[in-house]
Image (cartoon, rainbow, N blue to C red):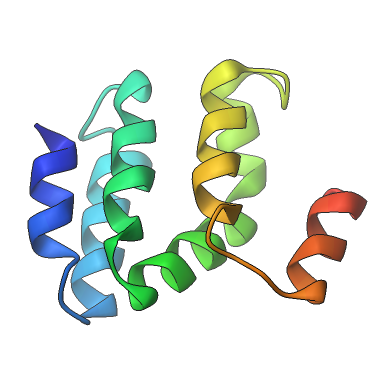
Length: 100
């Protein structure tokens, strides 16, 4: 359900709406942690969503690690994958290699 909502809401280009949805869903516990992957995947439908997702992941990495227990968590790994899947710059590659 969250994936359908995100695809519809994120097909536009309103980063404020995206920030509100992520804040509600992740920071305020609005969705279960196993649904985070759908949130990250759903926001990949637009270039703005792809950029937002990567920026959000980088800025909230410590919080996500705390929520999942470690970087080895399958959910953390999937969220990382969705955040970086559409990125193709040397800077992003270096961030990922270094551990952000």
